[in-house]
Image (cartoon, rainbow over all chains, first blue to last red; front, top):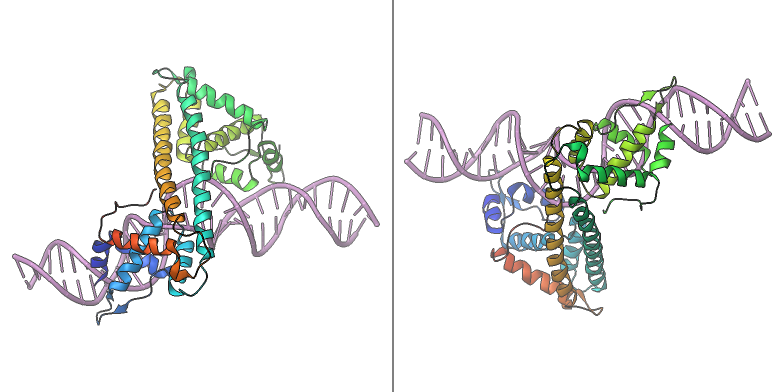
Length: 145
Length: 145
DNA sequence: GCTTGACCCTGGAGTGGCTACAAGGTTTGC
DNA sequence: GCAAACCTTGTAGCCACTCCAGGGTCAAGC
């Protein structure tokens, strides 16, 4: 299988496949006489695994760890559970922070619903006013990650 | 005000302030004889505005647009409303996608709660199996953004 | 006068996970 | 015989910072 076929079989872009190889997530395939990469079904399965984990927003570093586990089936699996737990914690924290953001943006949006001059736009007035509050450090620090 | 004082007054790191200047979000301040940046209250207010918008996860490009509006109060404000709407749409889409992710990860997590050998870990088995499904293109494409 | 330490300067590199491009070589189909 | 589609490597760009190297400046203490 050439890289284009692997790309079509998995829906992963050619450049991304080469990137995964350089990142150590896909073992370097053998090469045809002309230098083209030649993949087998093992590569396809491994690439599909990587993509499935990416769809779960697992980082490439963590995917590398999971692949190591796949290659060492006699090891203890506690670290896998902890890895998934940490991922879940990150996702849940991000949801909470985005929900707070959504409330703020919705409130902001309600300040102007017409097509006025900028000087009369309630949204911009609200942003400026809230920023003045922040300069007084009454807001918490840090963007919502 | 020197850059360190502005940093303490706003809670924004010195390097970030210089970065905003280079990005065109903060006007270049005047300089003291020794070359140190000298800020006034206008800079403080503008920086606070930028940080408040960043806390709403608005991109630097969009913040630049908002600052342009601040500098042109006679313009029409419809673009401001559209900008906030687009931001709100992005946030809501991200929340929905993260909630789907959270359900998937929770389901995955329930596949193993013990400290087994990797070969018996339900999480890894589930990941491998689901990935096989994905290679068959039964999954939708694309990570949750 | 000399050192120490806190501050400031510029410019460049690194982060993650790709994506896009340049500049070439190879294969395939008509 | 030629164009289009494919493959190769290497490099640069995206976002919003963050960190570092290698310097200059300034006030306090000895």
